[in-house]
Image (cartoon, rainbow, N blue to C red):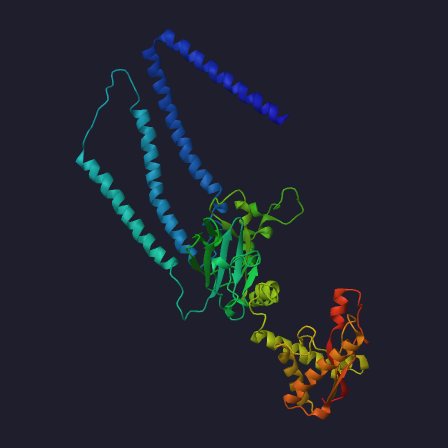
Length: 501
């Protein structure tokens, strides 16, 4: 019904306009074309002056009414250290261009009124005036020179890169249709190397996994940064032109394929602080979602955001990402909860070029896990808890030859045996029920003996160990499934003599 009424109103307005045109045409025939033209000129001149007044008042009133929604005014003061410089430059530019805007519009409509066509008036043509040309050339040139110098000064301040000895956080934002991949350095504080030729379904950035700096790098869905800490953002694009835009921090830089760019800024307000400032304004006390009147208010639902400021395709809108500014302690806690993309997605797969090596942090993690498990076993009074499985000891398929990575876990056991000289253990080999039972028995004995020989070779007394093979006789899972058979193929050790803690 509303749509129908709107259409009828538009038709009615069109009919009225047509009728006014016909009436005007008839009046001109009655009064004469020339006299009617003078009347129209006078009317249009008066309407021009009315429009001038209403237009300028509207500009001032609308700017005042919406100042609390515009960047740089009301609650939306810059939330970065450099942002105030850009806002100041914008205000200075607005001051001078505003003067020109008002004067030119007054002159435009005033001249239309003053020099309207009237009976007996002739146009005066002025082909040349040196004084006027000097005024309207020199004056804009001086103003522009001032604005350009101030702009260059601000540009040099805002676009300065970090110093090598400066403390800062470096992250990377890669735009593509239609999302951002945000990469953080891991504990080493360094981002690893990339090569676009390595981009694949599991490697969206083309990270070079042979570069050890890539191993602990983190991929996240939102940007989290500490307040009052300088941040350097590497900005790249994978396909078309994008734009890295953080409006509240006055950060805006193109993401260009094949040409990395950067931006350095320091957040000065946490997300919670910005929300508190918004809460002081009545217009932000309304529900964020009109359909949920009891839901969070606009100030409560506010988030800093990353947007793409280029029209990069139909899905352009989906490139929005949340940006959260927190305290240093909150940032460190959040960072500890993030996991390495390489370890979580690439490690141990066909795409992993490092299958035959362990990284230092992996060696340390496995050592800590082994020590904790051994201490629990030693401290327990339950007999079943005295048996521990080797999680990372492996053998070549169908043989008793230890894999190269097995030595790390066996070295942990050697260290424990030397730490607890009174401890004695039994090393046990087990198989699944695939194949001949007698051969399985022989294989389990050979594998247990291989572990025994390695530990003795590292200086542990032979009388503190014994090697036993149980073949397929002691399964811990069903042999009817691949997972069950894999669990049954194991090597473990049992504490025979309790060490003194």
